[in-house]
Image (cartoon, rainbow, N blue to C red):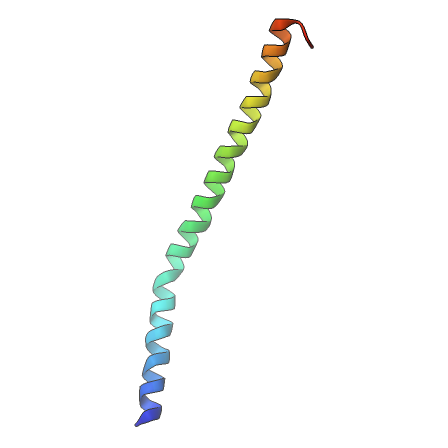
Length: 59
């Protein structure tokens, strides 16, 4: 009977792990979107800095 409880626990755990998979994928997609957003801001900042220097005549 004790074995049956453990076996049931494994199947329940597997079921819950399966349910969590889409959530993990969403987190990965969200993280890459956030990284892309920061990269875009970084590039825009560099370009803005270049334009500012050109306008001032430093570059």
